[in-house]
Length: 326
Image (spheres, rainbow, N blue to C red):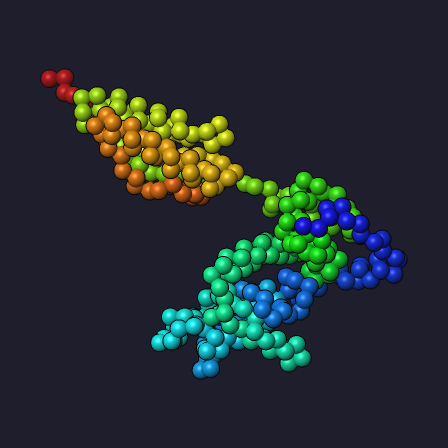
């Protein structure tokens, strides 16, 4: 990563006027490539979306380069013998490909799928997801501030790629060090909007996790054994990731946790499930995982709350349940 406090050369009055012209809002042309280069370089690994499948090859859109057209020859789809094109490529599917040839004069970009190695796929997907997040923030600021998206990239975004390796990494630093934005010759309104949008989008949001389990014990001390096993499960939580358990309807329980670190939270819930299973089995009972630990949405929470309320109403005594006085 390049120097955090790298100096930016002050602009002349002519350069400031030129930048203001670049930032002039153009709603019809508010679409832009993610990177400064018009075309990818040869041997770059990029993300594309399949547009059409023709006789000789498939035409695709280069998602990181303003959806310019590229082509994957069918001979470049696989190292193995091709029996069915449909098994290898389909319209609408996103693919990771390697750039084989680029003719900037004619606008041809030839691509290959068979020259992509497994380790390249993960790196490309990570880079694309980061670039897509940056692009979304830049576009949102462009629309709200009424400035040209390409102009905003030219005076701000693409320089972050040069200085920090990737603008996404720069955005994460900006959350803690907003002075990075103040070094750029931008209007105060644009700077404030950039900082507010970056903080909101880049600050980690709590993730709700849940696992569904069935705990049973038909021995003499069955209820106490279940209570004991559930306490063991809750005690498996940590100070940062506490575990809570709620009864849905016997024998179904839900284990819940909220955390900023999804993977750590899933690990904690998995260990809690194992602890409950071990504890209840030592008492002659059993534990079955109905739904493995996973991230849940607000909609899932509402459905769970609604289900619990429905079951609670069904268990309540209603008129006619009282015993006859006779």
